[in-house]
Image (tube, rainbow, N blue to C red):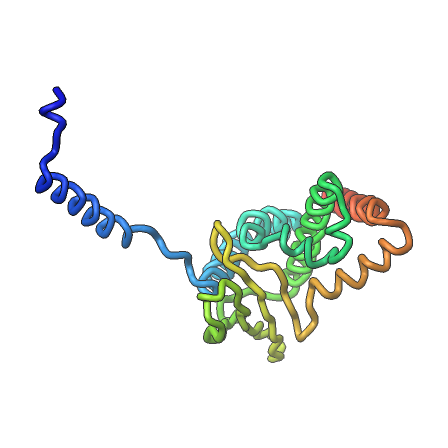
Length: 221
């Protein structure tokens, strides 16, 4: 048995050459992450298709938009990073339970916010892919952090600039901040939340968000 397992120098060399060649063949098959601007373009097209397909159902039940936003848009947002930036120094001081509950409530707040705004818009307007224009990518994706510039072309003729700050995670490129007409979502919430934390502490802020989310949930039901 030992003689059969023994490899000569030439056999050993051939063995390692085979391993090396196999590695070279397998390596190209490992998928590169989808570029950040492509991630957003695909999500926007998917959202437009879903909205137009379910337009009558949405009119009858506007809360259906929640499910579409949850399934199509939310997976592309890094809520942990957004929460860290929004809370700033308060994140570092928070315990594990506070961090987890804040992420949960903040995520729910943003879901309701985007869904409500989209549902209200749909009552008076139609949605087309032409509305969402993504400009050529300016940043270097090798830095693992980039800003995707886009425009929303409203039916009224106005053009609304939107910027998505994204970074590369283990699950691909994800958004951690959105700026509309130069106003950052993270900065806006950070200022607002800092004021609430100063008045009633982090637990008070979390309780306030939970109450707000409960009211929005009851409104949808």
